[in-house]
Image (tube, rainbow, N blue to C red; front, side, top):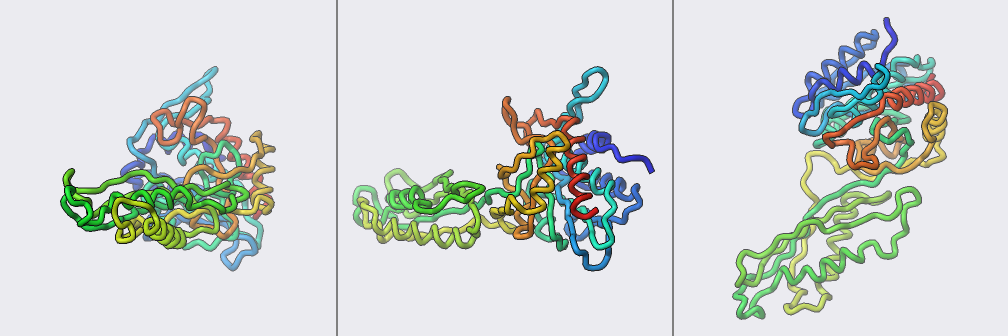
Length: 375
């Protein structure tokens, strides 16, 4: 059995389009795992799962997770070279997240878990869409490492993202006699005031800072000469622990209702109806998560990353990730590549790339950390 080369795997993986259908990429992943003599299965949700180590209840169970789907459109493989050597791999998925997957596979293949430990690879099929794979994943780990482009920094925390629609309802009437109706659009005055002040007095999270609440789109009214009976305002919430989706929904609806009832308005705003509903999803929202920066998982991985040539920095991840589905178990996001650089967006962009040296560094760091945690 030859040594696993993460960059060769990466180039082959980037060549496979997995933006509309992951079947070919998943088949390639399964074949790669099987070629190492490791049993692998694809569950009913399309997750690719393989384990090494004890089959009984392990003392320590380390789970590696990342995803094989990419956003559209597919961008084919390209390379930058220097002195005949590939220095940078371009193409869709190169950093998000086939580069991290290549580094994870290197560690998973290299380390034989000790007798009381297990390492599991759990790769999901639709992280960029609805996360149905991660939501259905049946893996009970003690520690989780999630592969995403972090620039080799260790990210044990990230904000969550919720979205919902605030609906204000009134009574339609002729605009010539506005007092005969209840103006739903006028109720926005109180609603926006509640949104602006929603987080006043809340303490910032020690790792993630303050939560944010942003109104993003608004629509209301049916005719320019009519008192509008309905207005809808969409809001974007970037949450911090311990806030949950339902807790946020209930609290915001109450705050808006109270503010609308008290706001000065050309109509009796107290008659404006208020309802706030989270956007309907097939799977749970990606909530905020935070692992203690002093946890052994974080310290071990950060030290290994520094030894491999990274900075050893520990910071929050700036994008939503399936890591939230594994919390409150200790979880860290880590991998080669960056979401953006000094020129602009990298992940999800036409210029998506990952540096070959960083793929090797990530593989070395993950291998080092895995040996310490379960080897």
